Length: 213
Image 1 (tube, rainbow, N blue to C red):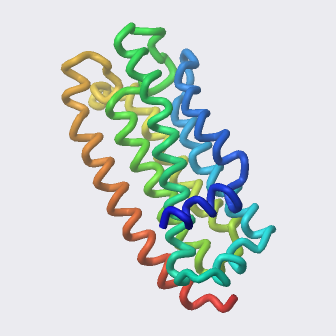
Image 2 (cartoon, rainbow, N blue to C red):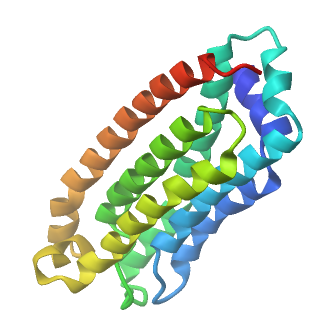
């Protein structure tokens, strides 16, 4: 499996995938809608799928001594690593801003515990729709992206809105009390992301098996 992941990052991943991972550092920007950062977590994999299509990467991979299911697994693991990597890269900045009360975000949600849980839910929705639609044909990446990015964007707008709704403003807090209260949101986000990735893999594999390359 390590060799398959290595192959994805060394041969199939578009350079923007790595660049967009480090855009997690954008949460240092004062008064900025931090869910915009999540868009890059979706664009990176999409660009890599386009790049893989143009370089016939899928056809090349199925010629290797791997199962057809592993083609899907490799792409999904690449995407998971990129998205989780983006969140982990941003985490030290988020901790620093919370500890120092550094320029609180007046635009939308703070980069707090709830933000990371909700970010995982946003990524989960995008991945489920994108992968399952792409592997119907293993070719139409653009169509799959459009179908996936719209609901993901709606979720992102809702995430930003929580700071402006009195009943949900606790999701925007950075006090110790609020951060502890937000822990269930993070836990639920992790569970949803893991469950959706398992479902994404299962559906995508079943659809890809029917594709005649």
